[in-house]
Amino acid sequence: MNNYPRNRVSPEAGSNGESSHLDSLDQNELNVLRSVLLGVEPNQLNKLYERLNNPQIQPEDISRLLPEAVVLRSKQDTQLVEAMVSTVEEAIQASVKQDENVLSEAFFPIIGPASRKAIATVLDEMMQSLNQTLEHSLSLQSFKWRLEARRTGKSFTEIVLLRTLVYRVEQIFLIHKQTGLLLHHVMLQQVAAQDPDLVAAMLTAIQDFVKDSFSVRQEDTLHSLRFGELTIWIEAGPQAIIAGIVRGKPPQELREVFQAAIEKIHLKLGIELHTFEGETEPFQASEAYLDNCLAVQYQTSSKRNYTYAWAFLGFIAIASGIWGFLTIRENIRWQTYLYKLNSQPGIVVVNTRYYNGKHFISGMRDPLAVDPNTLIQPTNLNPDTVIGKWQSYLSLEPQLITQRTVKLLQPPKTVVLQVDHNGILSATGYAPQKWILEVHKLWQFIPGITQFQDKNLLSNELRELELAKKQIEATVFLFEEGKDVLISGESNKLPNLRKIVQQLLKTANSLDMNVEIQIRGHTDTTGTERQNLFISKSRANKILANLNTQGININKFKLFAVGSKLPYQSELNLETEQLNRRVSFQVLIIDKNK
Image (cartoon, rainbow, N blue to C red; front, side, top):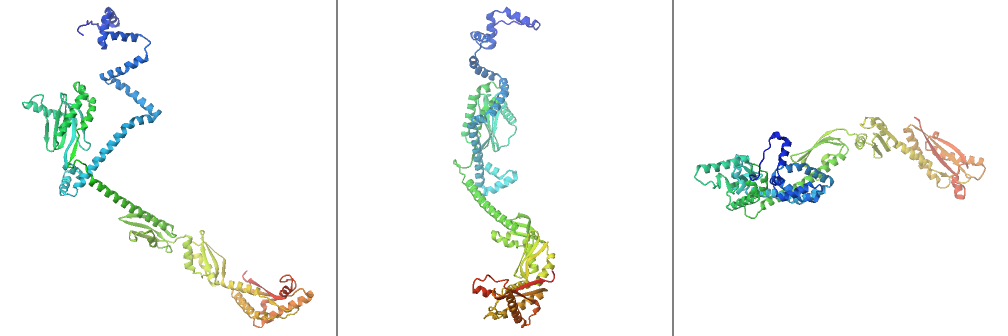
């Protein structure tokens, strides 16, 4: 700049003064000044102005200059990046709304391997930790470590890992050599760390103290510090140093890893280190190199052996499977038992719980309901594990009302009692009249019974009465033609008839009923009607006379001379004519109370 003329323009000159001053310069001087300000050659500047003065700027011209312009601007400061943030965010949102598969496919090659690597690392650390713990959990040394864990407040696993540790690089600091400022810091996840900037400042202060206190060259650097179990290894480069916090006894080969890391950082970030003015963001790129220095080695063979861990996990899996199977089976049996209880009339389950390996169940039970303990065995439950507590109550379920009714009324075997859902008690069959009368008095005192129906219930006496009636009405005496003389063999029916009639009259008397036995005389169609009526009456008297001789009350009988008006059937032959020459009976039973 010293080779070119400098002209000052006073502020009072304003725009007119400035313009007049520029006009005083010749065109060559202006071109030189522009080339210096813009950083381009004069001939290129002329071409640029020709393009700018040309309104027909082609898109392809801008496309060739735009990438280079963006790169140059990005190196100067972050204004271009900050200006493009909102535009990029809106572009991503628009892309997602238009087709979300585009971004997912773009990130898939990155997210998949990264996720798998992270999961594999976590599993590997977990298996290694578990294997170390199991290997030393039953040793004599483990008791000492358990005491140490109790004393220090750390977990037993953590103590095992520390005591079986050969070395572990816990933290790595990248420090600017000239200023002593922290450029970047990485550490293991399970390690608790202080403020990394403070640690870096202390390391720098220690190194400056050594240089100032002892006769050493300024270019020399501190290589290591040791504090109990911790060792600080330092590897220096021209512009930066790496400081690693190492627990245990690291091998010398680890130095080579540190050296390789500092060399690669200088190779990649040499310009940034040389021009460092306090901005640490560019040094995020060094994290991959620093992570390589976070090494861990335990007292195990080079070949990882997770026998104990896998054996323990296998045992846990088998035990969990057996326990799960037994638990599920026990639960199924218990649910089956509850289902059986709930399906039984007269049992109401109120509460259930499982405690200390036993099932506790409480509820209400009708005395006539089934015993809950009898339902345990079919479900294969252990009776000793089922503790029941039942309160007595009267169930109004039809089945139990029927059982209670049968137990109270004690019906004969010929009677069937049934209670429906409306509480109506129905009796069907035959029973002694005395029992029936008792039922009419007692049914109202049975809980749950609202009505008693006995229309299908007959007393034994009525049954006998009906049976005698049917037998008498089925009896027929046949006579010779035109006479009141019984044909051969018919008189043998008289003794049985007398017995049945006597039984009928006796039963009717016990039931306080009136009985009327009609004796009807019949004839065939031969002869005149007058003759037939006379013969039919004579035949009826014949039978009545035979019954009267046995002391039967003849007042219960009534004679009817029918003649040929009610033939047994049409007279088609001699056999049908003989059937019409008969005496038949009809019994009428009348209840005095109706």
